[in-house]
Amino acid sequence: MLWTVLLALLVLLLLQTQLSVCLRDLRSGASVSPLQSPPPSSSSPSSASSSSSSYNATQQRLPGAIIIGVRKGGTRALLEMLNLHPEVEVAKAEVKLTESIRVHYFNVEEHFRRGLAWYRAQMPFTLPGQLTVEKTPGYFAAPQVPVRLWDMNPAVRLLLIVRDPAERLVSDYTQVLHNRLTQDKPYQPLEELLLHEGHINHGYKALQRSLYHLHLARWLEVFPREQIHVVDGDALIRDPFPELRKAERFLDLPPRINPSNFYFNTTKGFYCLLSAGHDKCLDESKGRPHAPLSTQTLKKLCRYFRKPNKLFFEMVGRSFSWC
Image (cartoon, rainbow, N blue to C red):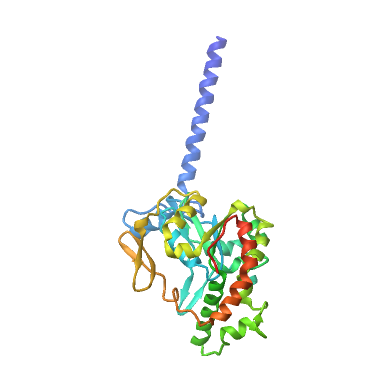
């Protein structure tokens, strides 16, 4: 008799549990959370399209990798080439008329005060497992950026693309000169800015940006060396594929970029990208003829950079074929 009563109580308990589960499912299915998209209507293609992002879990994520510089070192080329990878989505500049609006979150106070929610809103939509990559060349030389980046994500991977510092300086000046001329504003010749009483002008900003060792030292006070991957910008232009393969390994990406993704454009004089039958070349500002610099001044500049370059080589554990 006792066993019969116990068995009946057990059956009643199981039935009650099952009923509670059914009621909970009915309640959750009866209403849609305000954070969820409503289920698509079979008669509404736009609803099906908009909800597909929700079901695929696409969202704007903070970057897992950032190209921090250097300015005029090949950052745009590196970003576009990484974007060939199917598991990479890049934050692209928004273009309004002739103005290019870049992210510059960590080095522009007006942007930084807007907070991480604003920064995240500048990122592309990605699927789980995809890598978001952002590029702001001004980060590398900005003293406040390393700590701010660490506070966002201590595990973020950093890519630093460098080129011959003398060539980078001339390219930097050339871009500023072009911008000034398009605005009908005068600008001093390069040698007037670069030299003071016949000697290298240490205060020239374009020169300071080429002192890679000084800026890298600040980053290494915050991030471990293995978290910063150095890309040879000159090699990337000569033959992109080997540098891209190294970048894939650093980012823990499966090898998906191939030599067939690049072809040399003889008219432009540099490599263009090829993906899914479509080709893409960098805009006309890339490969722009450099402003003139006398041979004598260039030699002075190269001599000036010898010691800073050597210090940089020691910091990164490799050397480059620079002047």
